[in-house]
Amino acid sequence: MRLYGTFNGTLVIAGLAIVFTLIAPSIFQFFTIITLTQVIGLSILALSLALVWGFGGILCFGQSAFFGIGAYAYSVAAVNIGGSTGSILIAILAAAVFAAILGYFVFYGKVSDVYLAVITLTVSLILYSLMRRTSGPEYKIGNALLGGFNGTGSAPLNMPGDGSAMLFPMQTFYVSMAILVIAYVFTGWLVTTKFGRVCVSIRENEVRTELLGYDTRLYKLCLFSISAGIAGLGGVLFCVGVTRVTPDVFSLGQSALAIIWVIVGGRMTLIGPILATFVLYFLTSSLGSQQILNANLVLGIILVVFVLLVPNGVVPTIMNWFERRRTKRYERQKERRMKLRKHRAIG
Amino acid sequence: MARREVVVETRNLSMHFGGVRAVDNVDFELREKELRCLIGPNGAGKSTFFKCLTGQLRPTSGDVVIRDIIMTGRESHEIASLGVGIKTQVPNLFDGLTAVENLWLSSRRWHGDRRANTLVKETIDRLELGEIRSSIVGSLAHGQRQMVELGMVVAAEPWLVLLDEPAAGMTEEETFKTAELVREINKTSALIVVEHDMNFIRAISDIVTLFHQGSIFMEDKMDVISADPNAREIYLGHKT
Ligand SMILES: Nc1ncnc2c1ncn2[C@@H]1O[C@H](COP(=O)(O)OP(=O)(O)OP(=O)(O)O)[C@@H](O)[C@H]1O
Ligand SMILES: [Mg+2]
Image (cartoon, rainbow over all chains, first blue to last red; front, side, top):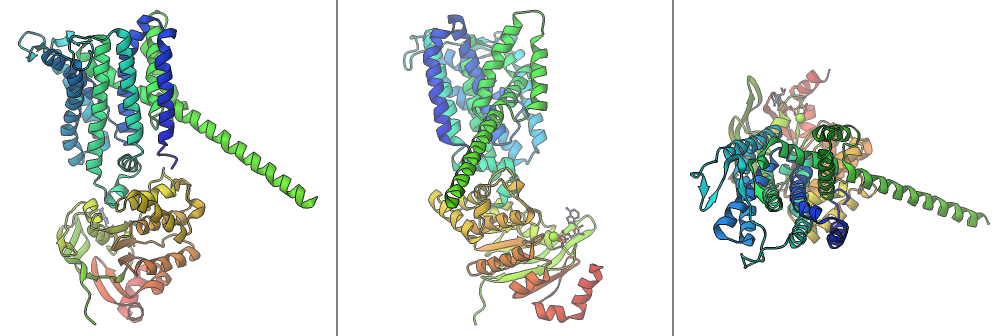
């Protein structure tokens, strides 16, 4: 079952991620470690898009809407209930429930794929302009001011059950990596279950899946909500890393970036988009510190190059290359064995 | 002999596309364990009738009744969920997946993981798909793809099977194999088979329903239909 991937591969990569987490403090500067928490949040956004788009075939142009909802829900909840553990759960739920409501209309209304992309993007942009208009003391949820285009502060993570025991940056990094690994293993597991496989079959041929007796609308709705919940979780880590959330999380640029990460990393894999997020993030931020090349221009060129030359993305291309080498070697061995056998038969 | 129970029934079923009456007031009955062939010239409305049965089209008027439940205008998955196996006229496979994966998805809808895996293995042996089991079906030859689609139907063990042109584009040998398979499926399930290939129909058929311009023109044994001058006219008139 090649296209479905194997869960063992997922576990191996998760193991490597844990090794990376343990050695990261000794190879990176402290400042980089702090930045990493944001990037981990963004990579979870990429993971969620890889799930819904790569595996479910649902092109959600506005995945950042759920990312932003997660970030805002966390920030607001943390002020009101004081403490991050419950707020994280609220953020995931808020994003997933919002997606479930939106998805209900979209999937049960049999909106076509292209419109789905447009609608999700529009929703994201509506949230963007709505949140920008929330400056002033009258816009608040409980005790949390929304703050218009300046956004609102996001509380750091704390020990579960003790709102006053803030985590240090290094601890926050460990927790973020743990969350990334859990999210990755969960998605990797999900795509090997019956549910995940049916989602892949919907991507391949929705009519056929329907004719086999699967309620494709329900499957798509569930996948959409799950992926939104994961995006919301990404939003939490992002705003914790930045220490505040602004309406920019809903911007067109944010949505576009997520799509670029997935395309470059390879949308048929889960690890590809995660890695692409890290690489491209540090590439553009190092470009940002010099004046010769515009970072957005470089990003645009990378995207065009990938769409034209490596349409499957980096990770699938590398995996195919290895596979081809392996089959070639296997065939050569087989040939040699056959020759030997012939020799013996003659001799 | 007591008449067996009616499992599929259409009442005054009509499907119009603008002015085209693709299906026009069709009353049809299929009984348990029956094997019925639908024939008729191109454009007679067979596939449209078929799509009304499978929920791919919502009929303009009339009703589709399956096992005493009115299924008119229900979604395809609701109809399939009654235990109906469907193969459409246009090839309909998961092109990016392997043959095994295709069969598994069909079987798993009805069976637990272990049973589904066993059924997939059995189906592969039965349809002699062993050589292509791990091939991506998008890269297979037409006849092989047809076989995989039949395999998907078989692997789900449906009680009612609807096949639209299962033998189209197959070699003689494959057609023969398909006819055998259809008869074997018929031991446990009722079938409606739309087909053009007369040899295929002769090989499998019991009662044949002849469609003409959206209506049932005749319903009888194949020998009787081939001997009927009007029925021959309908076919010959469209063959040249
Ligand atoms: N979606 C559609 N819109 C308009 N007209 C249609 C549509 N589908 C079918 N028709 C018309 O309905 C009539 C019946 O078509 P149908 O496909 O049911 O014929 P058929 O008996 O299956 O023919 P064939 O043997 O070629 O498969 C034809 O005149 C066809 O042009
Ligand atoms: Mg037809």
